Amino acid sequence: MAHITFKDRPCGWGKSTEITESFRAGEKYITVVPFLSEAERIAGRAQTQSRFTLLQPNATRASKTDHATEIVRAGGSLVCTHALLYRLGTLATEETNETTSVTLGGFTFDVPLGRSLLHDYNLIIDEVVNPFEVEGGTQPRDFAKDYVENGMATVDPVTGKAEPTSKWDERFREGGKTFKPALYEQAKSGALYVVDSKLFVMTIPMELLLKPKSVTIFTYLSEGTILLQFLKQLQTQLAGTPQAFTLEVDKLPADQERAWLDDVRSALTVKSIPALEAFSWSHNSQVKTFTGSGSSAQCRTAGNALKKFYGANLTGINKGNVLLTCARELWYDSAPKKKPASGPLAEHARLFGHPCRTDDGKSRAGVWGTTGVRWIGNTTRGVNDHICCTHAIYLYDQHPRPQLLQFLNMSVNSQAGRSFSDAYALSEMVQWIFRCCIRQGGVNGVAPMATRRRKATVYIPSKRMRNLLIYWLNTGQVHSGPSSWTVAAAAAA
Image (cartoon, rainbow, N blue to C red; front, side, top):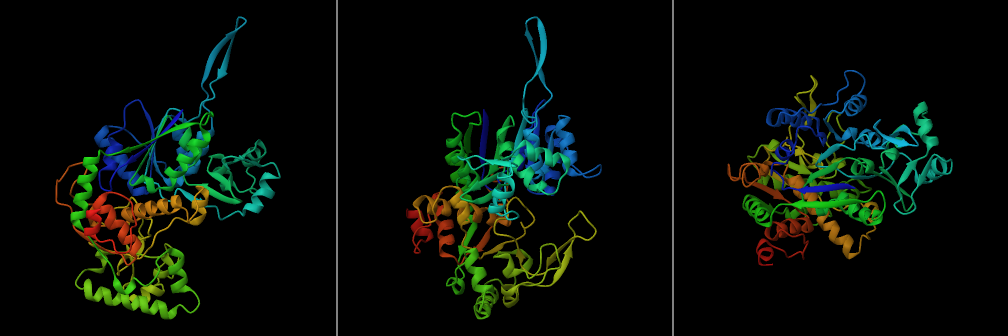
């Protein structure tokens, strides 16, 4: 029976160190991290700290996908990014060539064991980003007509899981492009679901969670993650079936968690931006308010307010040491990885700066950035590139997408839906804040109080998000509270 463990560890606690120190001789590992730079760091640490070799798939012979396949079939251990998860998921569906001898009537037969190619692997996943997505390339109606009705796929009536039939397997092996190869890999790896006539894709394939010897997922505030909520629901549905699995959340002892939280509270200052409190900062609201019809006046008002706020509160602070998030289309009027151009809010705020290229250590061209404040997405996790930032501006009121709540059998307006929405919002916000300098020093799992935790200030105009953070810092609990929550009120509670 598969066993899945969530290692719930505070930001900056030393998850990378815990991962590399867990490698044992004679065991096989697949370690998945968000970024290539982190994969290189994990591989280097594993070699120097544990004398353990983790191979990194590369494209020198064919493709990273083919190289990862070669490593697994040869029984090697590897570290890779999330980009290879679907391929690893399809490998989980393949069986080894292992057999066992059976003697019947004086004759000996070799019988296949029918074990997954990953049955003796330990899977480690660090900081999964966006564990579910709404599949946007294929309409549910087209999937039902072109795939299900044509006998290419089946859909489980209980779980909604879509699986390829032998007919689709054959088409894929033949290299046919009529039926999308990428959609096949998602379905084959157990990542494609049909729920209430909507197509969802797991960014961690189900087969990859159920077939290895063990699965360990490192994150923080796991109760606010969509993946854990889904697995709890799936565990109930699969109880008593061959696909049943056990689920564990491994948290720190309460005294260690409390010491870490007290340390963070003493270093983090939480403030508002009063002139921006009147605006709604949910994703849909801010996009509609600042980019929709007749939005120019609203955008000018908010942008000017942000400019005045910066001039009154952050004068003298290098813009490169200020982190900011909002809907991407408000800050950039350009596609990702292209030469940056300022979006409507950035243009009025005058905090965008000039486009520039910075050395990313991987290519001569480097990557595009700006000389203004550092914008990063509101769901950014696992990156240490912004630890120089001492101030952060959080222009978001975070909510899970309604379709995902529906996928989890939760109503947006139900008590369960509201409670999970708060937990989700807190989890994403805390991860974002810990991209800045506050992740350095202080109480952690590697060298407690080796250095004093660096101080940071975060400005949050959304009352709901501000209250969630203040209450959690003082109590360790998730509670959005009334709009009158203050640090003192939260401490008293």
